[in-house]
Structures are given as structure tokens and as C-alpha cells.
Length: 113
Image (cartoon, rainbow, N blue to C red; front, side, top):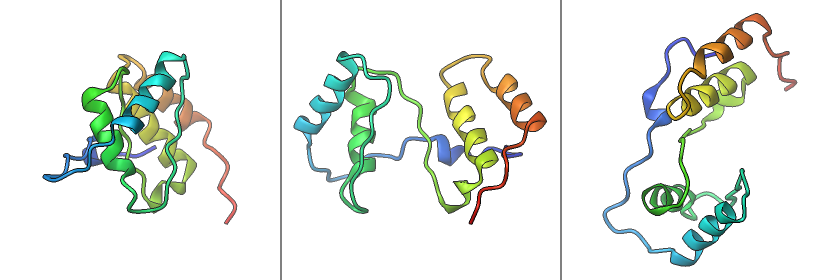
């Protein structure tokens, strides 16, 4: 569990000044929500515009959003779940404290390297 949450990890990056419109992909994401999917995965190589697409979707999409930017240090299960909970807590009141208690009382086993 992170002691101090780095707020930039929970902040949607600003849209680039000159972005490419992706209406077909935005509609596919909205369709997933309309069909009742609770988790959507966007996968592409680095530099293909995943962050830009999802940032645009948060502005024009049909769902509520939480944002979490991950880095190499987030491979630690406790760190990851702490940030995951902090992201969700921005939209779900009273969520963070019980999760923090669980993470502190039952630490995840170390990740094999």
C-alpha cells in the first residue's frame, strides 16, 4: 500500500494539442459498456495512442471512469492494489479505508522474479 499516493498516477493525462480523432474505437468502447461488459481491455504496442484514446473516452464516453497510470514499481502487489483502491475510491465513497485495512493485515506474498 503506498504511504503517500502520487496524485498524478490517478489523473487523466491532458489531451494532446493535435490529436487524431478515433470515432470508431470510441464507439467500440461505448458498445462494450452498453452490452454490459464491466471490464474492457485496450491493448496495443507502445506509441499507438492507448492513453490518448482512453483520455478522449473519459470526456465523451458513456461510463464512469477511474484512472490509474502504472509504472515498473507497480509490479509489487501491495503497491498495485493500494493504487487501484485509491483510484476506485475517487468514485466510490468509503472504499479506501476497508481495503487499506485488508492490505495492511494480510500482505500479499512476494512476487516471484
